[in-house]
Length: 168
Image 1: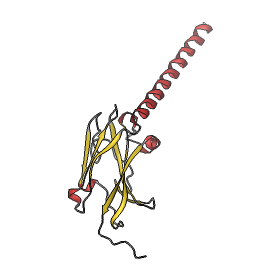
Image 2: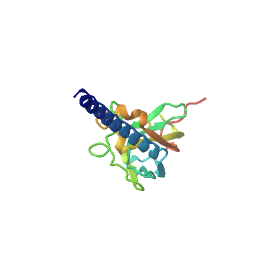
Image 3: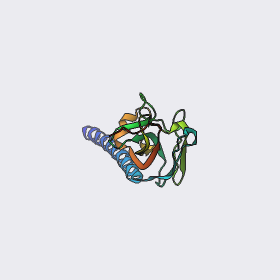
Image 4: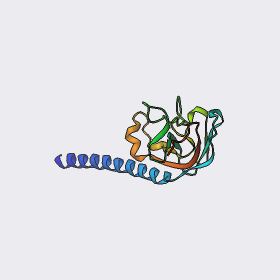
């Protein structure tokens, strides 16, 4: 009887370990499949906010979620971001977030959902950084847990700001 009990306990332990290992492997596969797999297809960033448009294409084999957009100034500081503080990350789909981008699909972001940089001056070079993550590994209820697995893609743009640069 003791041998049967020990055998049952060891089978349960083996099953739990195998399930945990499978979940970790699946997560790692999704992270590898999303590496560098979101690309800019078109960027239009004029002075008129309503005419701004950015199109992103998913070249990965899994659904991707755009969770944050930033404008990074030359000194490395964040000039603008979406969503605006105190919120740090967007939900994937639903209210306030962008719908997941299917494989070979695209997402166009327009208007006030693109960040503005109130302190940027006219024709300042800034990086538009887009944070994304595979839908299958994103913890929407607690996005900070997924932050280490998020990736970003960025492009350099000329910001159409109104402020003049400081005199030397």
